[in-house]
Amino acid sequence: MFFSVLPLRAVAFQAMFLLLAIAIEAHVLQRELKLVPKKAAQYAMTLNLLTVAVGWFLFFGFEPFLRPPVKAQLLNFIFFDRWSTDTVFWFILAGFIIFFTSFIIKLLGLQQLELLLTTPQDLATQQEKTLRKNRLGSRKKQQSGLPRQPRQASALLSANAFSYTAILLLLFTRMLFVNVPVL
Image: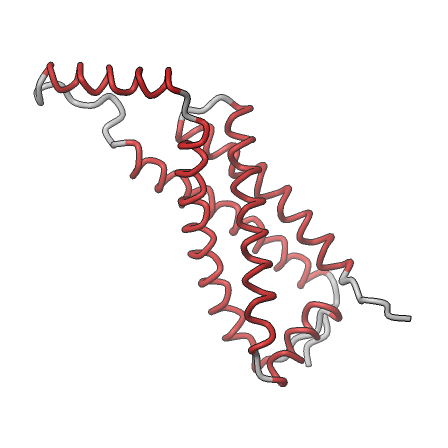
């Protein structure tokens, strides 16, 4: 009989980190994009679930192409929570790559999500506002100071940074208080 191995610890930590990221990012999106709490939470959930799904697909896509020693170290880290000092640089580099990749995925996901959720009435209202602004001329400044796209990007970047910082603090705290073996 074939039994597949399920890394329950990794699944549990992924769920905990996902809940933490959703809570933090929903708060930041609500505050910076002036969204109602329900909509901010829905956006945060959708974007984080999209990011996690894409991340796992990328991981399982790249994993077969890793060299056997690297694959063994990676599996040792995922299944047994053991890592070597030789791989610290690569984990840090992977962390930066994952941070910016998840930011790009979330930014593209938010743009697509807003396109999907825009109703014809919302589109007509936006066109009316644009026409009124053009009629008033360039003397009147925008109330927000920034167009919608850069404001979304900065809000997502700060939300992503806050959630990754909280997750990193949890991981460091766990490493300090739980005896994690280093090979």
